[in-house]
Length: 259
Image 1 (cartoon, helix red, strand yellow):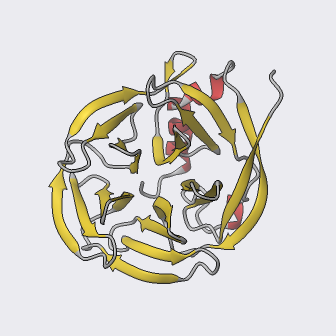
Image 2 (cartoon, rainbow, N blue to C red):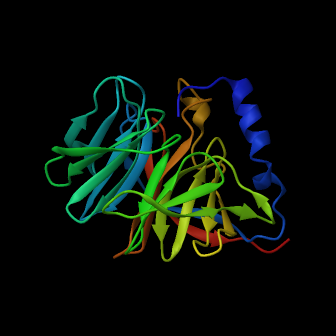
C-alpha cells in the first residue's frame, strides 16, 4: 500500500475495530530466536521462504521488484524490476512459476520461478494485496474481509472466504502465509497477525507483535509498518519483517494466559 498520512492511519485502525474488540480469541506473544539483515530499501509487500532463500515482492510505483534473497546475509541474489507504472504486491510460488499481484492496476504477472522471466499477465477485479497457497489452491487478499480462493492454473476465483473475529468482519487483511493448515494474515497498520481457519474464515488466534521493532526509528514510521510473513515448513521456522525494516526476525509464538 502507498505512503499514507497519520490521519488515514487512525481511520484504518478504526475501520479494523474487530481487532481491538476481540475478546474470546487466544492471543499469542513471541520470543525472538534470531534476527537477520533486511534491506531497508525493500518496501515489503509479499514474502515467502523456499529452498533456503526468501522471495520478496517490493512496492512503490517506479521502485517495485521481485527478489530472491539470501536469508543469512539479506543480500539480493536475483531481481526483476516491474515496469514503472506498476505497484508490486503479493507473491506466491506454484510449481515452476512465481505469481505476483499489483495494487490497483487489476493486473498480475506470472514468471518462471528459476529465472524471473515474465511468462504472461492476468487480470482480476479490485485491488491486489497478497497471495499464499495450500496444496491445491491460491489464496488472495484485497484489503477487505474477503479472501479469494483461486485456481492456480487459471487464476480464476473459485470461491470466497469471509474472515470474522467474534462475529465481526476483519478488514485490512494484507500479507498472507499458509502455516500448518492456517492462513496467517498481517492486519495492515497494526502490530497483529490474524490466524485464520480457511474452512470457516474464523480468526482462531491473534499474534501480538507489539514491541518487535520500534518503527519510530525509521524515516517514515507511519508507513513502514509490520508486513511480511514467511514459513519454513521443513524446519518449522516462522519469519516476520516490515516495510523497509533493517531486520527480519525468526520468532517463536508464546501463548498468553486467557483473560
